[in-house]
Image 1 (cartoon, rainbow, N blue to C red):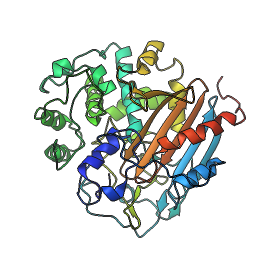
Image 2: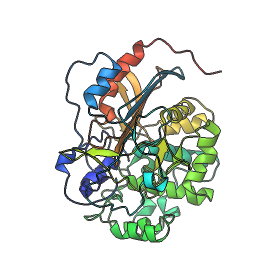
Image 3: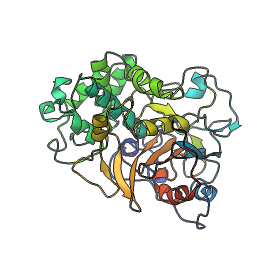
Length: 421
């Protein structure tokens, strides 16, 4: 996340839906990360300010993302592409202006991959940080391991992390549904402070997540497990670690072998794409005066809750895969979309998804916010419509707020010929 956000703002960006954070209220304190949506607390991002009544998709994007923000938007109907367009700039070119320091201590992707720089537009092949949309895949990995008979969502957390207090009361299903009561680990400099855990994670080569579990031993639960809902990235970083432990391979490797590979998701990765990397969106924010580069967050630290990069086309392949049995059994899909017992005004959390309705239509979705990016994967299963919006603007409208404008347009689009066989 951008280093000019406070710890609570950063944490909120990954912990809550509709993350359109008002940067002006967050400037000053250095801090760290937070998934999608995904940071902590109710939505703190601004709702869109209506201008002219939108009459087209172009109007909707321009009203909500003026000033050259990079937006890649795609609509799929009946499994086929009905609309795709890139807006603004995925890279605003040199010189870069960053605010404050790189608290993550990692090399930024343009330097890491020696990327060509310039004023480049996004396109269907542009990879964006997915933020908390990543949670859909981590939940899917857990359900695949349950299909394999290697774990159960009813397993107690103590089976995998016996040192965490009250872990015998927490189930994997509590983690999947954000009903564990665990504090937020994506927080630095204020309670609960995971700065020391991050320092140890870096010192260990960014592969050892035990420092997070060790730090959790110092913080009491927020509530009795299973009695409340509280969106927490901690739940999903533990799930990602459990996937690695049970499968015997890193989360990214498991996802590639069991989801990305079988579905042909060649542009999706835990972390950044494999070099050479050229078509990658860089993250930006508005600091109250001008547009600045954000220090992009450590995607390895976020493995599980928000560490994936992908494209609109690859996300659609995933949306198709969870529409009917294939890599998942019907039992797993039923589990995936069974809401927990704690409905919210915007929907009820299931295993990596929010379950809700829009205008009477079943509506299943997840949004995300991470340093420099806001994202949305919106699906309407009864209408066979998917709307995917990826944006490199951390301070503007969460795409959650534009879906109600886009969906009626999608409904009226001519039915695209199905690509299903």
